[in-house]
Amino acid sequence: MQTNEAPDSVEVPSRIAGQRCAFDPNAGAGPMAHLLTGATRGDLAAHRALRERFTLIAVIPPEAPHAIMVGIEAIPYARFCAAHDEAEHDDARRLAGALCFTFSASVIAGYGDRLKSLMGEAVSILEQLAEEGDEVASTAALDLVGFYPPAAEIALRLMREGAN
Image 1 (cartoon, one colour):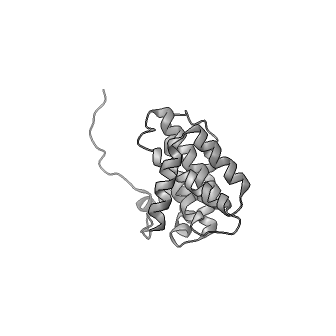
Image 2 (tube, helix red, strand yellow):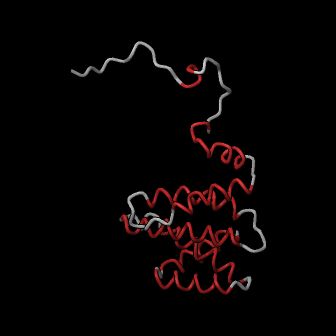
Image 3 (cartoon, rainbow, N blue to C red):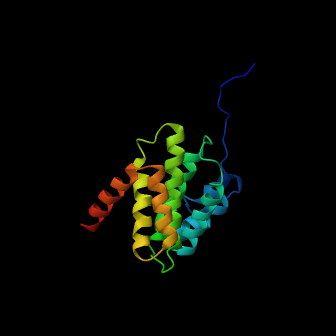
């Protein structure tokens, strides 16, 4: 017979070791803890490592049940990386990819209407890169608009709002 009674004492890891540990809210993240700490301090390498953790996971198909969650986790790190505005714009392209992936997963899950701004933002990023002469970004932007035509209008609106 099972009971729902609580044990007399519950030990937590710091008490098990017999010592008090300094508070670290990221300690429960395991191997990602040092990356999270570095990222909070603006360390671009840490942001990229965290983005890559989720980008590598994102090789899952967009129809996977947890695909939206993976995309949503990748977007903030991709944003932080892109904000550094490196000359080759690889980080900006990866942000566009994370936005596109998350939008695609949301469409498959039935939430496309709620996250359609993600595709518009991806097109906006790619169009800005195209204006700087990036032919791959230009082709990708056209492909995305062909896949989801409302993205063009959303991208224009976002670019106008961002210019103000």
